Image (tube, rainbow, N blue to C red; front, side, top):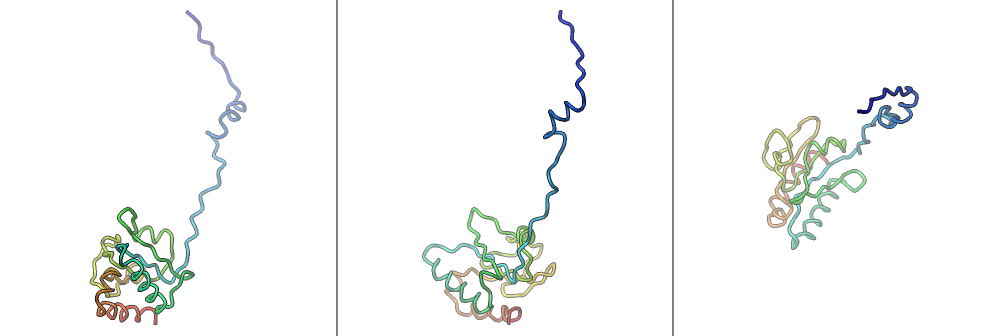
Amino acid sequence: MSKIEKVKIPVSLLSELYKNVLIDDALPNEPPVKKQLNAVIAVAASNDEQHAEADELLSGIMNACKLNIGNSVVLKKDNSSTINSTAIKENYITRTVILFGITPTEFGLPITFPHFQIQQLDEIKYISSPSLGEMLKDKTLKVKLWNSLKQIFV
């Protein structure tokens, strides 16, 4: 049978061989830069025939609140995407979140509240609203939303 030999490898050679494994030269991970926004708008995706009208309604609401692409973001939720309060807090600094067709619990909030009620939680004001498609069909819903939004933006 063969003899097992003991081989002594110098530490300097070992550290050179395994420098990428044993020594982590990577810079510490810096937290991502969060974008400061006046509002985050989460919208449940509308069906195709109402898509253009819903976008027009949303654009009108944003203009009335003096929101634009520079000071707000619109996130559209479809069946495959997830939009929730945790993701918003990780990526944005905002004082207002408007939900269209997404319930507070679907959004990941620990509370539920009725449509058009301003609810403050963790220094963020939330407003829940029916979907844009529903609002296109009923003018009274638009009026109720505007009355709530005026309290924040006007």
